[in-house]
Length: 169
Image 1: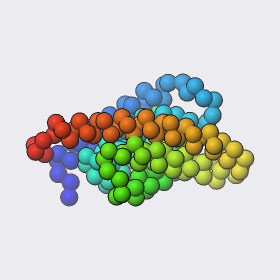
Image 2: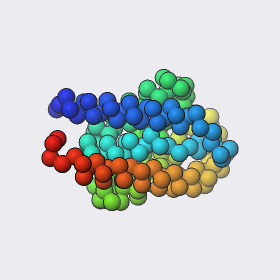
Image 3: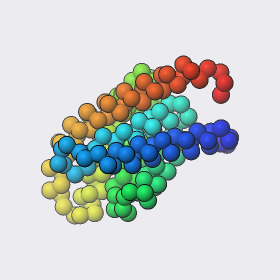
């Protein structure tokens, strides 16, 4: 059962993730490979997983994807995002059980890798073009780099949140 505080936190984190997504969408990517981006909004999902729980983080993730697609995307972009998000979310839920919060950066890298695999699978299925798999090595390298950065941001934020939260909630 969700209480008002938890619903409010989910809404706030969704809004933060959406703003980050929209701003990041305006930044040109230095690598001319389709699908490569920083994925900074995923730091909010990671933060939510460790501070609110997996279910609530899933709500933040999918609300952000739907709202982000409505604000600055297309239906096809939403299909790619959801396919990547589903694999990413499942992988992160699994590894969260065996990692500590100090290893959140590892969880983020694994999530980013699975996100790119999910998007690649969707692209191959939608376009019926298996040649797209040639992009996979570049996507995996970018997933490790961006996943590390995103994970460290989320880990830092979650660690400080736990310190200031105290026993008030």
